[in-house]
Length: 139
View 1 (tube, rainbow, N blue to C red):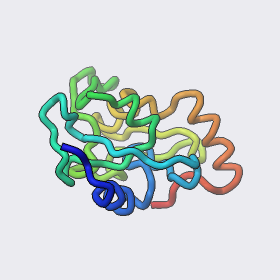
View 2 (view 1 turned 45 degrees about the vertical axis):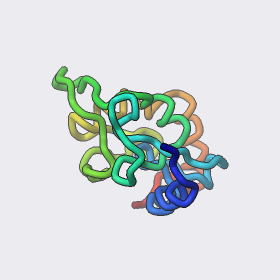
View 3 (view 1 turned 135 degrees about the vertical axis):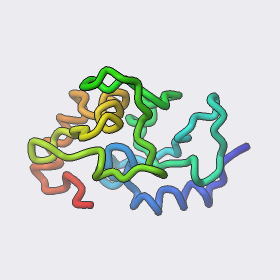
View 4 (view 1 turned 90 degrees about the horizontal axis):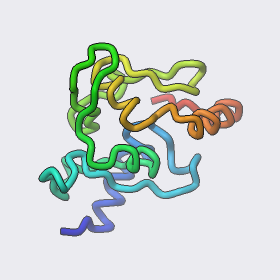
């Protein structure tokens, strides 16, 4: 099945046109968001709205077909952040003025690592965005 353009636009609009994982907004990166299957199709996930999230290309690429990862603090396998069933502020917080994303919970920590949310390229970009008062998101 294919995701309709209407549904794609709905998912992005409901996310405020920001990645539901790292919160980077479309207007800052100058690229459209992609639609992520929270439960990947290869693992049985479908195209229904409840399984779709707006994601930046970087988070979507690093997430791939992953649905779980090891939490470095507990060394246990935990599910990745699910924008439909988890609250972002429960699992993540901005640090260093908005340059780094920190996982507060096993789910948050595992997701930060799996999606490489603090890779050198995004941290470099966030430094510029913070200097321009464009980042971090206030929500």
